Amino acid sequence: MSLADAVSIDVHAHAVLEETFGTAGRYGPELGREEKPRFRVGDYELHGVRYRGSPFMDIDLRIAAMDSAGIDFQVLSPNPLSYFHFIETDVAAEFCRVHNDTLAAAVAPHSARLAAFAAVPMQDINLGIEETRRAVTELGMLGPYIGTDFGRPLNDPALDPFYAALVELDVPLFIHPAPAGIDGPGGDPNLKQFDLDIIIGFAAQETIAVATLIYGGVLERHPQLDICISHGGGATGYLFGRMASAAAKRPWASESLRADGAFESLLHRLWFDIHVHADDSLALLTQHVNPDHLVFGTNFAGWDQQPGDLRDTARPYGDNARHLLRQLYKNTRETQA
Picture 1 (cartoon, rainbow, N blue to C red):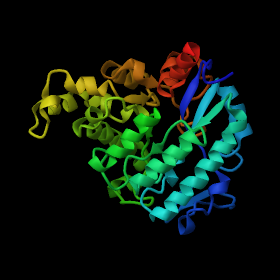
Picture 2 (cartoon, rainbow, N blue to C red):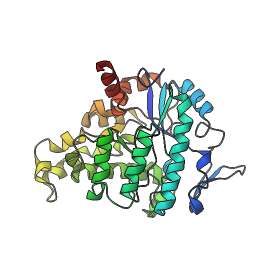
Picture 3 (cartoon, one colour):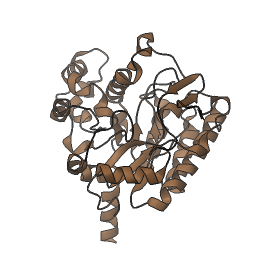
């Protein structure tokens, strides 16, 4: 089996790597060995999530769990708790190098079932480009995986060289939020209880990312750029009408964005994973985005992974995933050669 012929492809699956512990200096990461699990990143602590001895860290356990869940192929991504987008640049760059070397080596013996996305130091755009290029061309990774917040908006012109490099490399960009306050701004204090930082905060960040990419002209400036946003783009399906109306009527909207159907056309350029937890939520999302740009995701082994055998659920999105991950392109080029 391979990505080329997999029926069920999961693009939303995070990995935690033993070899990266302590490589970000005082920020960790650190996994406690107490009876109750404790994962520390800087001053942030996550309690109760079992990483060691689970599919998050053990490849054999992951593949066994994939078999049980009916998942043929999975692309592993950085843990959002340890993006390290706000720490010192040199420390973040070293962490990303160790992370990518380790993750690439971990999936290499299992290339029939696993691939990986790269962590990149977004504090410094040039370093982010360099590490992306190294990860893709030397390590065989499928593209960069970043948070929604790293000190500058996604439409900042300073990011244009980064986006242009992704087009040159012919790889997609995956965007997934991190809980506010890990190593950056604390965010709304109301999100500090009931896990609202991940339940509600993630959705808010994803929705803001969608709006920023469209309103800020990123997709117009980079017409060949593919960006996939986690969890169905947050509240995008629900807020579609309000977002489209603003594009047509608000004074900051560009002339091109005001044109009939412009917002909808740009929204159809974006990709989304369908990890949205409810059939009616997915139906609403599918009404407004490009159904050919939807891919399957699980947050595998996390608290919100879908139960049971997922093969039939994932099946309709397999070709979309191959398209996004460039497998269809590669097959076409190889056939023509």
